Image (cartoon, rainbow, N blue to C red; front, side, top):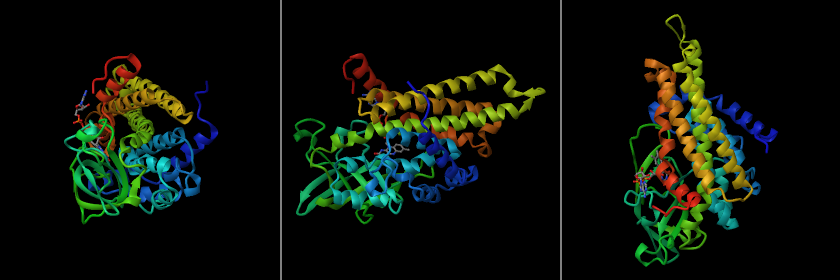
Length: 388
Ligand SMILES: Cc1cc2nc3c(=O)[nH]c(=O)nc-3n(C[C@H](O)[C@H](O)[C@H](O)COP(=O)(O)OP(=O)(O)OC[C@H]3O[C@@H](n4cnc5c(N)ncnc54)[C@H](O)[C@@H]3O)c2cc1C
């Protein structure tokens, strides 16, 4: 058992950190305040080939594993850019995974190459307001017509739809009532985000303002057959290809937020003098930060274990979910403690920790909530009845 990163993995983290160091706290604060997509950061990461880290080499990718993608995402989030930096890249990293696995050679060239070289972006439309976490209840419907499909429906929380060129869209092609199984009858498309047929309304939200999230309304959108991924009716199963890698990468990013918050809190605790001594000399300041360190280290070990299982093609569902749970909590706890350690200044934008605090709770509830994670683990690892 080897707990160390390889030389190659360490060099990935170093190279990514070098790019991230060009984007200051001031940059991320401004993007957050103005709600503006970090195009410059996206372009810098694309220019050095990082958007294709897990993608096939023949398309310009590096064909590395989820472990390497997690190392990269951790370095990105820990750099000060937090969830905004993470989400700038995240959707393009693993949402198109069904295309990698099931796309035809023509689809891979047409759809993936522009995502890898950064000339195009995609958003990912799964969640619907009336379905919630019960994806089988989605209502967006793709009706078969000559040459393709006519789509009507709506999605919620579709991140980056303000700036995306494409949408990876989950639809029903057979109504729930007529599908053999609840998970049958869904179909995935990757298609142009045609703004004459798709209305995109931004949702004002608590944090990560630089990366927009939206309610979208689709009216009579024609999708050519060539934009369907895999077979009609099997979309839900295809989606599963991207879920575990997504959880692992999100966990690694959440841990990056935790590390950044803890680094800032420890630095402040060492320097801030009150009652004639550094506040970090008080155990009531030291201990919660030391606990954050323990939580971060254990979440990282779980994340690396899940990534290693995935990359060795072994079952990793429970570990990927556990990593997501532990990573999200580590982020939230460390960011909360960082604000408290700064006292009143924790509430000031100048010290950045309030931004991390606002972003950290998102790590607990998306892309899957803690409740659903625990229900899954109770069922799969503890043999209890399925509850969702
Ligand atoms: C900032 C942001 C960005 C997002 N980006 C995207 C995106 O790009 N694309 C996309 O498709 N989605 C996106 N999402 C959606 C996100 O994945 C969902 O919000 C999340 O999965 C939770 O689903 P929900 O909001 O529908 O919660 P609901 O399903 O309404 O659940 C509400 C609460 O009830 C709990 N609950 C529900 N059923 C059960 C049960 N059986 N047992 C126990 N507890 C239960 C949940 O755990 C949760 O706490 C984003 C969300 C946010 C906030």
